[in-house]
Length: 508
Image (cartoon, rainbow, N blue to C red):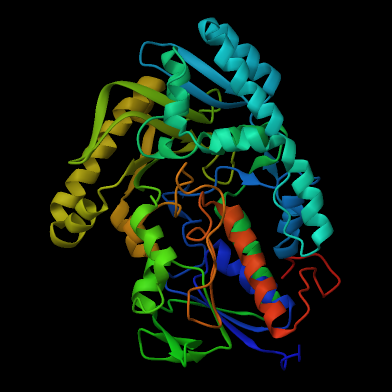
């Protein structure tokens, strides 16, 4: 293969985790890089905001790869200095509560978890032991190799082989269906109900496995503790990050992507175009649906995205550190969210373990509420603003009332109330249907990623949560790395993920 002149140029649409990681990798390989973000700052769905002295985060609750001995940790090191982060590992990972005072603790330590479950629900002993065995079995399961070397791929495959029957069985049943095996209502509640519980139970088992081996810690500072250093590293490497730059279309010449045009008419040329934003918008809007193909057409008709969400965020003038940081509340009286959404359980995150989120002695609290009725909230926001505000207030009041039963008297200590809706998600990220994480990892989707290419279109790649079911920050990093390695191979350029500057990453 005859090497192409370097530097070549890459235009990346979207400055979420996938876009930023791809930009860092491409810049390290010698490409001129321009990242275009329609919002006012990078991060996409990995975002947080300040209200009245409090910080509210909409994304990061734990980061896969916090264990410095894990392969994922090494991958994060390629894009920023993850070793500068301070990770928190809660002993009590989740507390499931009923409204009659009963509760169930989900511990991060597997032995303690098993003892607690057996103590709480001895009638479910057989299923408890089966579930805990699955967590133990996957606690050191390797990720599929990202190396290009065939020896590495074979070694990883051999390590995965004994676990394949378990992986297949857990990937073919939803969390909600799996939970119905148990008799105890709190234990069933842990596996969830409704929209988010439609993901394969494999995802929940892996989450517990990673928590148990301290590979899924919470980084102090939340989303911005990760996004900020990667964006700074990109700038240190000489990449260009433009915010407030909304892409109108991908420019195509002779079935080859040659750049993009912005909403204001500006043209930005590139030898490659990488879409790291919303998948539906890229395929059907930016490319006018010209390169869909039967596979992607089936995906957008049959796959199920994560629901959208409302988030009620509370600034509480009280130290809530005596409470578990993540509380699932099972409701005797269901919560009416909108005309299509009624919930029988909700969850609160109490960020008392992050001192950067609230003044001393105070606590930032969030409640994320899934809904698929994004059309309802977007219509109210655009056409009935007074009703929109009234509905937000109604939901907030209901959430506060439920939280007050968890921590009696806390209602009087609330200083800040902030409500975001699916309309907020669509406005800030343009995510299809206001989805919170792209495709749900369901028994139907399986765990295999989708192709990063579109049929008949050259020099164009897709990365992020719309090509890797299950979403999350790791999907952005993994798909970005694979994409840049692919374009390097096609251009005859050496893929060099290590820092060529000789120093630690993220020091800019």
